[in-house]
Each structure stands twice: as C-alpha cells, then as structure tokens.
Image (tube, rainbow over all chains, first blue to last red; front, side, top):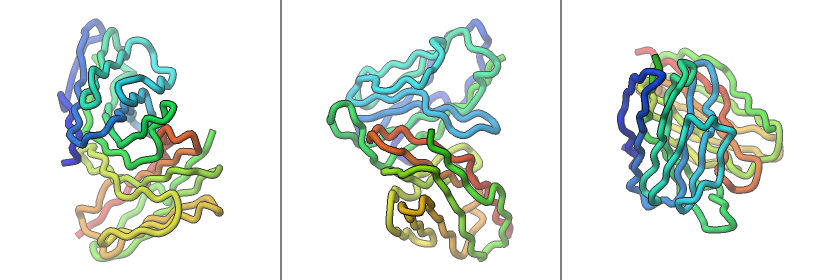
Length: 119
Length: 110
C-alpha cells in the first residue's frame, strides 16, 4: 500500500468507447503524474500536475485527456483509443514546492496501475 | 536527451545470494530514484539518491554523481525480491520529469 489508489485495475474497451481512469492519493502531496508503460518500452511520462495546474504534457495525443479537480484526485479520460494504446497506466504523486511551477526532486510514489486493453 | 542504461538486463539468483545492479547515465543529474516493480505491476520506490549512499534493510544504494553511475545492492536475496528494478533520473529543472532506464529483470529461485 503506497497511499496511491487507482481504479479500475483492469479495463477492456473498444476503439469507439469513452472511459476514464481514476487516481486518488492519501499522502497530502500536491503533485500528481500519469505514466504509460508499454511492453518492451521504458516508462514514459505523460502528464504532470502541480497544485492542480498542468505543468507537463509530454506530446500526448488528444485522445488522452487528463483532469485534476483537486490535489488528491487525478483522472485520465480516454476516447477513440487505438489498439497500440494498450498498456499499463500508472498514476503517481510526490511532495512539491510551489516554486515557479517546479515540483522539485522529491520521492515519487506510484499506484498499482490500470491495465488497459483496447480492442 | 539524457540516456539511462541499466545492467545486467536479466539476472537469475539462488535464494540467499547477493547481487549488484548498475545504472549509468549520460549527463549530470539532480534527481535519481530506484524502483522495484513486482510481477503485478506495482512500482515501489526504494531510494531517492542523487548522490551518496543509503541503506534500507537488505538493500543499499550508492550514487557517484561525478562519475555518472549508481549501484543497487541486494544482499541475502529472497524470492520476494523478484521483479524488475528501474533506475530513473532527472537532469535538472526540478520537475520530477523522470527518465527511466529499461530495467533489470531479477528472478530469485528457492
């Protein structure tokens, strides 16, 4: 138990579906992240939110739409995905400093991940 | 961008053995973290170690920032140590924009 909870743990969706991944952290952190882990590839950072503001979008296609309503919750809305988007999606959080948008190098804690299969 | 290389890519150990995992990075960093990913996908942070040495039970890590490498030591390995070990670094900016290596896959057999 890392204090970061993701739901659902497994999701199968068609290419025309709309679904969402949810992440909640109970650590009092102010920075939250989405990472993607595909087979045979290193983890890739997708989005960073610091104090509810998006500070990083790592050239992610618009079919992935993040939402951060508060510092404890992070969503990833999915629509019209492709089979190659099938992967493990990991949410994470860390302490941060409100310093010109910087998160600072703090220990990062991951959730258990959401296994996504697009058919 | 910065390159992160981990070695060995795969490692098989007998329970009780010791091992050393290595992480080389191509540029100076101000953030380096080691993670263990279990077979179910859960990533656990082991160390935040941009420099120096830290120990936590049977695990310890050393980062020599001037020579651009970090080592993770596992002593008296157990079957629960199996999984993939990742090194991740950030060059600067303090955005926790971690670049991950490809990992070392460890299998510990009883």
